[in-house]
Length: 402
Image (tube, rainbow, N blue to C red; front, side):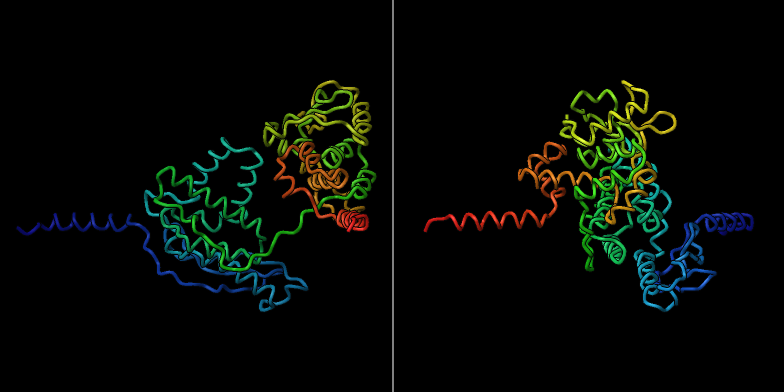
């Protein structure tokens, strides 16, 4: 039986509604090279992407400033920056950037699940670092991508595109975070497998810069250059006793006795909590110049018996990064060309202890790390130790009987 005109009209209207709400159509992925254009005092990159409705749109973002090094759109530094950025853009086809209805994007999973889980289960310094890595490197690349559609090849292309900018350690941190996000999604039964499990970097990666360990001479010069007593004390606790900056920020007056200080907490970024490990809880002997600086600072503060040594407005512990950047760094840079923060004072303490005693256990006990960690990360090469060892070797050979 043929439908009536009214039925045909109703069917036509229903089809129009279905067409209006259908999913965004997928576009065939086309690899782009990008276009560099000059605007005012900088070079800007133009390329195309798809919005949430599947419509093509042009994107313009700043690539770099125009200066003596980046003087032309076709000069090598600008070309390398363009190629690196476009490699990120091309790492995933635009057709895969829109998640189907009912499918969760990586960005949604990060906001709703992963970050809350990290805040609840990880130390503040850990999840704070993850949030920074996400914002700097992963968000642009992966936030709009479907969890189910992301592939191992996408991760490999992305990491490889970062090799001109990042060293091996930072690249490893990015990879670890990305893999951790998908591992949690796997355990929530949102995906079948972790695509980052087999991700490899298909390019040569530069090694990280050697970690700095301040010498005794540099430590004394920095202490002399810093003007404020509290800043001197803060740096001395890191560079003489080997405390982590977060542990130094969490020290209280009641932690001190006549000749000792008890380390029992940490305050990463100004938020007090537990120490990094149980072994980090330790009691250290007070030595000069720390002992004198504690006495001077106590007198300047009115002889307090309790409370934080270093506070910010509101009475909370200082943010160790901000405190060092404002009250220590500007003075330290004038006398120490290798200045790179208070943590290198901890490295200097470990190196000096080992050089003085010849026993790694001295650094192990003071720093609160395992022997393996101390040897791998804190004991720095010392040419003087090598020369002294050869002298002892020579003396032994000269006295040996044949």
